[in-house]
Image (tube, rainbow over all chains, first blue to last red; front, side):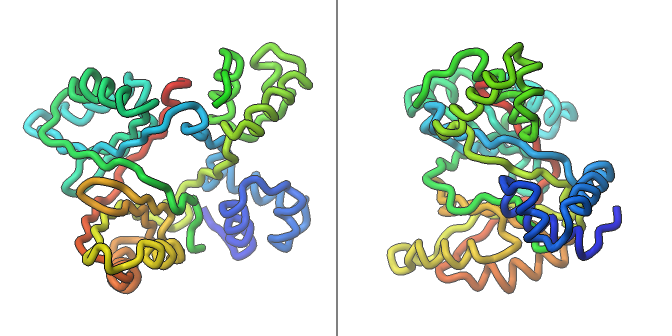
Length: 152
Length: 152
């Protein structure tokens, strides 16, 4: 879809601060509230804006551990990706699934209450996933930046 | 950490899928009055379980067709200050996510670019010139899926 300069301005502010009220967002973007509403509607209908999502703080929910698990799959089986992802979706501790072109085929974002819980999830659910050739873990220490911002 | 009941979890599920839902609509879905739904939502926000909102966009539709995850290993640990690296990398507009991790890399970065040529420019001019940067591994994102995790 076509995006003009005013749309880009709105998106820049909206992506940076999605919690802003519509009035503040209009003011910062230099458009009237009616224009803002119309443009956001148009970008939503055109599919450029998918929507607002609440961000859940898993630590506050008692999940202290977050691990990024990177998998290489056995690609001699043509169904490997589909079957792996289908099985990963049934693990409640999996909060994200990403597929890649590169050395890593799939990444799972896994949370656990503590290390004992993580070990249990890892052994009973993760290692039981089908078609794993290799896997390695990156344990999250801290998130320094997490934004949806785009250099528009 | 706060105790959550089934209604809280149902509310988190609804808001994780659509953060713009009104208290009236939330109440209708959960069988609560509008003020009761509003009070519950405020309680979840005040407890920090809901961190805020995230605006989800179609990056490709906005001209950013390439998302790459980089694993970065620092070259000379101990000699480079982590703060210097973190400050410099967080200031790059194409870098959306910076995570300090433990494992075969020191940092995980999510980088957006218009296309592969643009990504190469960001990698060479912005990433490889960061203070202390050593080995870098790139994996191009093909698909991503956020899951509701333990509240799903």
